[in-house]
Length: 280
Length: 280
Image (cartoon, rainbow over all chains, first blue to last red; front, side):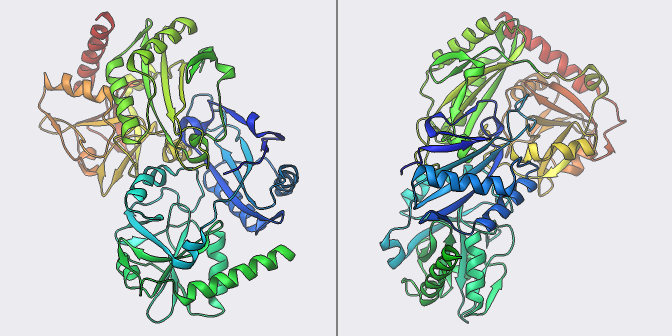
């Protein structure tokens, strides 16, 4: 994991090793903040308008104010891409609850923009698929991309103990999403289904829904764990992971235990869409 | 709200205005950390052994390691009390997920100890009682004092809109606790009841349970919202607020809408217990 040498804090670019927040910030005091994350390739930030829409939406849901205009945020992203010389990377924008007077009341938000190398899926994961487990949990504010990943991080050694690549949350048997990815299934009629409720609507999820609708019947609806176990294909989507086939859930094989044709076809379509965005 | 001029970060006392964490800390990146809070009077930290027990317990539940011994933590608390010259105050210890390499994996924890003036309840609140509302919510890790107060902070303007002093969480009609306080009820048989499950076991809650058992029948068990609405008395407990009578819940009057004798008697007992701890 390498980091961009420069980051942006509130209103200026600083050396990353000088990027600090005072301990009174509400992220440190109370875990309060939102963020978003962009993929960069050839110096191009993918789907930046979607990500900025969502960043402003997350802030609004959590009653935080972004003092910066979209234009300033875009200029900041481009300035970091130029100064950090990391043409293939990710850019993260975090907006916190600010320097709270009493450690509880929100104040003027702090903004941090930083750049990092990407942890991309391995070729083996793409070609052979991944194994996942499920865990009962409902995010507190699923529609906002808050910084609260307490459960996802707490589960990390549970993942390692189960040799699982990720964990899918469910409540009352209805699945929702992974800590950082959305889930899709292909049922026995070939319909592509993804949950509609109690999830963060990922930018890649939206793109995959659009692409899938060109080729398949698409449905946004509740999916139970049993539905998933019985599905022909299951896959996850995210900015970093794009589309990754899931070949077992809770140690139960999905289909024949191999990546299926729908995930493969949609990954090709998604890569084409990224190229379109890159040259647009 | 005034702040102690000095704070402790990791292994040394620094000026509070120099107390920073790097933005890679997992509290800022992912809201991951635990804390505890002590009340100080006449330079004496109340019930420090209980609070340290719980701080270590919270860290253990959240799979974090406190590199400091209890003795070092105690010495730090006393050193801050001396240097900050705030004989009546609160001391907060925060342990974060540390400087994460990839913004997700925990690293060596950062420890922050800081001192602040207390926001004590007003005389009017103690004498006339407070109005509260309820909200459906279950904490993710109720037994650990994590820094995740996303819901409590998000509800602040909802409290203001309802002229409510605090919000009591419930799930499936069973009440649990406030963001920062425990709840007690006195039923029509005069039994003092407090929830046993899905709560943080407050140090004041433990003390009040012990004190109440000397005078009344005491029970730790589930309480529904209907039970509360029909109770003779309801009150909350916390380190800062001690015991505060609750005279209405969701705009429904509790009893005759005035503070009751049990809350008053237990507050006197609690103040005596604090004096015992102070002179011990």
